[in-house]
Length: 498
Image (cartoon, rainbow, N blue to C red; front, side, top):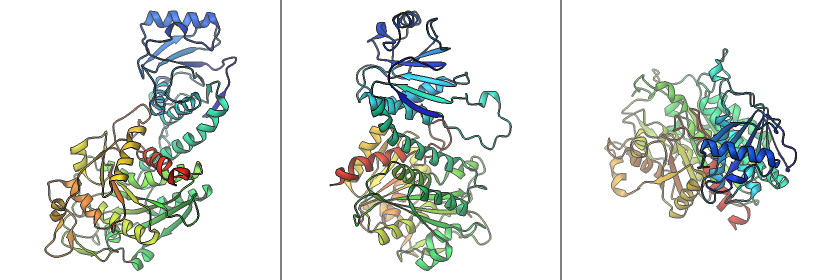
C-alpha cells in the first residue's frame, strides 16, 4: 500500500474520508470540497443523526458532484484529540472499509486537533497502516470473508503536506517495527525455531544495526547454565542474539532492552495441559518487541545508543531435558534449584540480563517477557505488569504507556516476596509458590540485574492474544514497540538525554 500526502486541490480516489469534531462544524462539513458537495454531505449527516463522537463513523453514498463511490465521516469527539487517539481513528477508518472495493482512499485532514495538522495526518496514516496488517501467507485458499480489500493507495490531503510527509517518516518506522514484531509472534514454531529466528534478525544489518549471534558453545564458555538448561531438551540449538544501534554520541553508555525468546514452550517435564498449548508459539513476544524496537530506532535514525539482547530457546520434554530437582549454575555464579520446568523464561532472562549488564554497563535495562499467568489474573489484557528498582524509570514508562496506549501498572517488589524464593539446597529456587506469582518471578529477575536501574514488563496479557483494538486485530500485537520508542525518544535521545 502506497501512502502519500498532498495539498488541497481536486479530490480523487474511490473513497473519501472526512474528519469532524463532535457538535461542531457539522454544518460546514467538507470545507475542502465544492459548496454543493459539502451541503449535500451535511444534509446526509443530519438525516443519519451522526454526532461526530470519537471513533464513530457515518458511511454514505457520495453526492452526485463527487467522482467517488463512497464517503466516510470519521468522528473526532469533543475537544482536542491527541496523536494516539488520531492513530486509533485511522485504524477505525481502515476497519470500516471491510471487504469493499476501496482501492484508492483519500483522507481530508481538517478539524480541531490537539496536535499540528502535519502530526495529525501522520498519526492517521500510521493507524491506517497498522490496521491494514494481515498474516495469511500460509493460507492457500482464502475465503472471501477473510480477504483484505485491495487498498492500493492512501492519500492524506492537508495544507501541511510537506510537514506531514516528514513527520510520517518516524511514524512509519515505528509502525514497521510493530508489524515486524507481529510477524515474528505469528510465525509457526516449525518455521521460526531459534537459529531461523536469529537469521531473520540479521536482516537488521541492512539498517545499520550490528548483529552478533552466540551459539551454545559460546554461551557454555560464558557459563550460561540457566539459559542453556531450558533448551537442552530440544533438537534445536539455543541462541543468544545481540543487537547494537549506535546512533548516539560515541562512548555514551547505551540503554539496554532484553527479551524472553522461548520460541515454543511445552512446559518441559512439567508439561502444560494440551488445551491452548498452540498459543505457546507466542511465548517469545518479549523478544519480538526488542527486534521490532531495534528496527524502529534504526529506520528513523534515532540519536541514541541502544543494545537489544534476546535469548532464543525451545522448552521441550525430551529425555535430555532439565528436570525438577536439578540445580543449575547461572552466569552470575548463583545457583538455582528447579522446582518447575515451566518457570523457564526467568532462567533465560537471568543469564541474558547478567550478560547485558556485565558486558555493556548500560544506563538502565528493561526486560520484556510473557512471564506469568499470574499477571493475567491480576491485570487482564489491558495493562502490562511493571516492576522496577528505579522510580524515575518506572514513572517514565508509565507516562509513555499512557501516551501510546500501551499501558503499564506498577506492581510491588519487597524483601518479604524475595524470601519466598529461598531454597534449602541452592541460592534460590525458580518458583516462589502459588501466591504472588508475578511478583516472585520479578524478584527472581532482580537477583540478576546487579543493582543496575532496571524495569521488568510482564506482557503475558498484552504481547499475544491480547484484546483487539482499532489498530491491532491479530494474535501477535507487537505490544511494547511504541511504548519503548516513546520512552527513548522523550528521555534518552539527542537533546532530551543531555
